[in-house]
Length: 337
Image 1 (cartoon, rainbow, N blue to C red):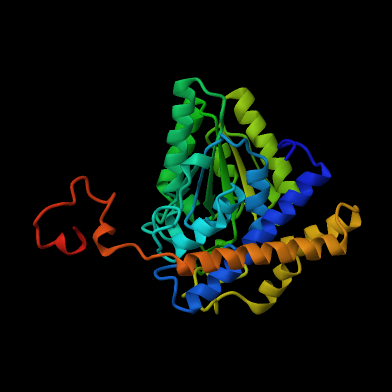
Image 2 (tube, rainbow, N blue to C red; image 1 turned 30 degrees about the vertical axis):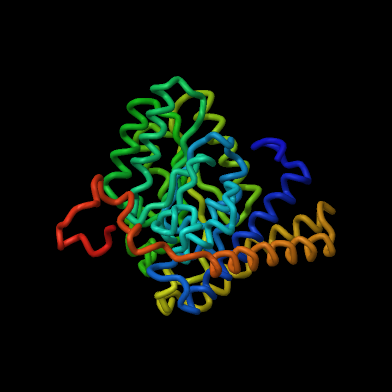
């Protein structure tokens, strides 16, 4: 891409391809889960591609990013190999984290992606720490931390707002508001449905943007990172979006109204952005068909690679968990060499 503030045709094509990759990858991950090849939890972000890709496209490659446990898209948008992401989901030794992190704990330090976390709101203090490290070392990066509407009610988020405002840390707080914390709607969880003013209470500039519009997200995050980088101070942006699947693969998604879901499907970010690309002659219908076929082939290759990769040896399952896992304690010895 030519730069976070640019809207050149190639930038738009790159963003569309990234959104296609995330959608296709997660649909394939759903199939792998239903086939029993993915264990544990699987949280899909289908519908949130514009929020993810618009954010990452507006960041510098060395700007650190942290996320929630719904983070396959962030890793892929940052450039992580789909093979290693899918292998991680399947718990294979070729996975991004050696197959021991799984869906909720992807991390790619080489691409400044400092991970997804199973604790709601857990990524926010880590993003704050990264921002503090940047200031301490005199760098010019900006820490970006993404968290959901459910996390805004965690006390640690208020604490991070306060510390960021107090210490003038270069951080962008991104509230990815998909309007549901598991199955609880925002109106039943928050006394105030606009979430960005919570940051304003700590002197942090904040605003809301349409999280289903990739160009709107890119513009908002580009401005937020510019402010944080140049003024060395925190910014907050709320991205209003919607996920089309339930909270996780184990959620039958019977709480949300069918009419509401259909209304949001009409604003599918891939469909609406495709119309923009066609309308502005950035891509032709044939270009889009060819790109989609290429992405589908890439995802099938990732799934084949993952399925054929070896599982993590039982003796290595406790690696990187304990400081000294090699002991004779029968309570924990079963998984150790």
